[in-house]
Length: 238
Length: 238
DNA sequence: CGTCGTATTGAGGAGGCTCAACTAAGGTGG
DNA sequence: CCACCTTAGTTGAGCCTCCTCAATACGACG
Image 1: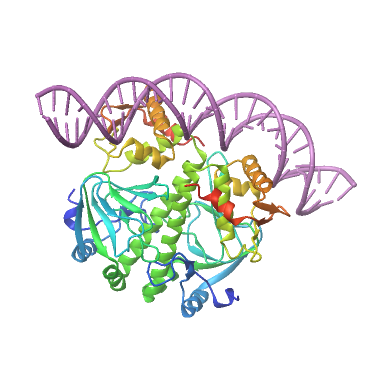
Image 2: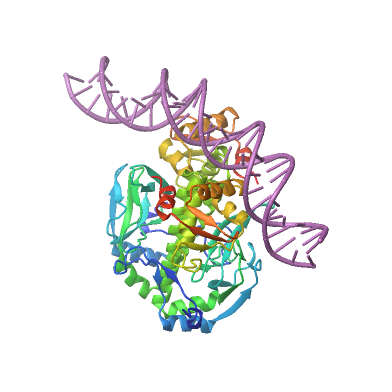
């Protein structure tokens, strides 16, 4: 689908009842997407390219057009924690006191719509629905963060990995065919960091799933889910 | 201060630069608060009272007026995970597909403004700034969830507890005097669950801090921070 | 084809969970 | 008002998982 041809996309599960339960849908109308495309500039990034750095003045917010990106937070001592991965139709760059709180970096080659904050605010003023859809999108991201809190805090390594794989499998931009093939563009270290594990533990968890015949891996970045039922049993032990 | 006399309050760190860095401020004008008070109904809850249950149809969103509440998510097997504690000027009840995703329960006696979703939406349509401030508030909650993800995933029990205590100490509605006294209205089990620990581990961590002279406890719900510097050292190990 | 960063595999140790006993506190009914 | 019961909280012993450290294999790059 020529998503990008229409301009920025925003996908989330809406507040309202009318939509089918639990399924993310496009929030913006064609008109809104065209309008956003007009006030936005497209910026492309090569793998590893930095979109913005934590602490930098926040003059724009970004909507992912193509590619995969990650948000991370650098601690004083130099270590970094991966907080989230982003895909097309996600929004990043929400500021605090005029500055970005985290850094965002491209994992794959990526394109983003950069929307000037003041321009966006002006658009919000004119288009109530657009404004509301952004509220909806941020709420959706909040819920995802909360859902992640559960699996991060209370579950073991196998469960975390299973949850992660289900999440990636549910993401249309990583699904390669209808038969469980998933593309994992990010490095193992990033995944481990994201899940609050060490690279070693992640490796062992993946190896165990392979031994059990739940998944198989060809290349380091390509994985196939063989037994979705058992994967889900691992992901959802309670 | 007679917060509640003015109507609902919304506190968060705004997007914009102009405010002092990193300090939560009142987002609403007196007029907005009065307006919200008019379209809202006040509902009171005794300790343990359920504000709404996960899965219930979401017809209202709630703004905390008085008291402390918790959000939790019940799993199939009956166990519950505490996702957040809420204080005056916080917003809860953001829905997904017309239903609440989590349950909210009063920890102490509490009062909430219940705002009908449709009425609120109508107000958003008329008052751009009000709409924008809600976006700001939700963004703020998203950032807090992300910050918590870091300490949940990568740190040990002592660190988690230290972070929690600093958070509670930073909350004006729990601070009892200027000298480190903090009121912890929630049960130890809730705290442990919230931090992703068992009650036993939490108990041991608190005991250790007492032995080290960092805190002291009188009653189960009252705690005093004696050495803020060392507490912060525990909370922020990297 | 060599080199360096990334990924996997192995052994050992620390921290938190489980299980269990015990104490404290709050609530009920006699 | 007190005895009783129930639930929350504390403390201890043992086990299990995940992290740490170290060595090795793989792969992307020049």
